Image 1 (cartoon, rainbow, N blue to C red):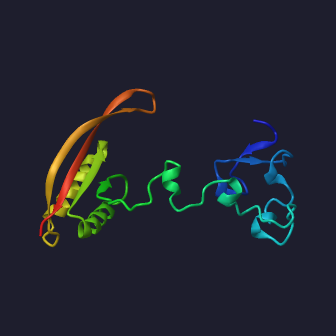
Image 2: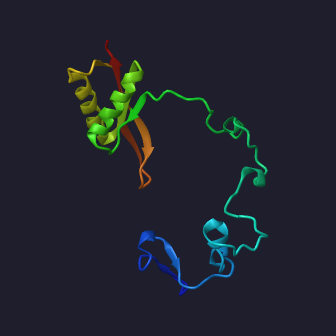
Image 3: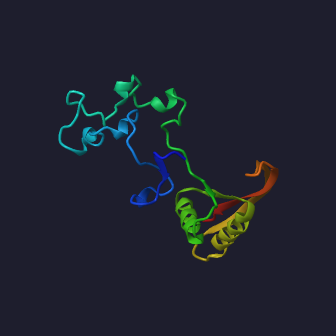
Length: 170
């Protein structure tokens, strides 16, 4: 580590774990005396003839500004897609239950997906929804499988997966 850089965490506790500079670097534009002023935070101080460099529009970069730009650049289309799948992770149990209830209010079926150690939680969510008397739903198809993954240590592992379909019964 050089004498110009140190591991952060002292005065600037909000940026813990990042590199901090002890001395300004001439090549870095962030170290300029008016670095924060021309982005709309202060009065004047701009060296670019009064233009605000903080506002970067797509016209300045020569990109298309049309409404359908998601299709042109390979992004997602601008149409609304149905969200009928719940991926179980580390959120609290009732967060998944409430999400499932919100989706069941508008959709006839939803799918709860989980893998690995979260399969137990996915089964609990499905059972909770099906056993509640005031929730008119039942468990439909259950699909199990495995996915090949590469772990952090570089080994190939198979991870179990489950998909539980919940159907609205009226």
